[in-house]
Length: 97
Image (cartoon, rainbow, N blue to C red):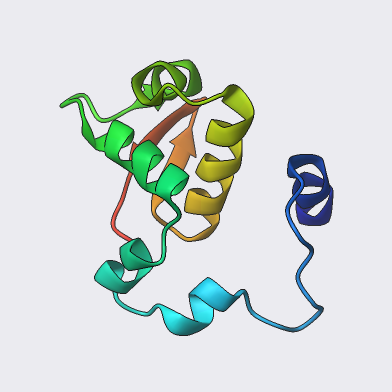
């Protein structure tokens, strides 16, 4: 299923058995955030912008000014990195473990 999501979003497939580069290098929360792309950083900042903490993808699109595809791709990457979680269609920022 992950491979289908990667293909749909245009992400490169991981080599079998090889961990993603970001996970290899980043072990501390600050290190993960240092490895973010500009788009991922904008999406993460948008998730931090309001006190309520749970954001629908449309809210993130509006807050960032990015396209839905860019936001969806960034949210998937951030979720895989443990920076955000999705619950009932809403996203919230969490500290990576």
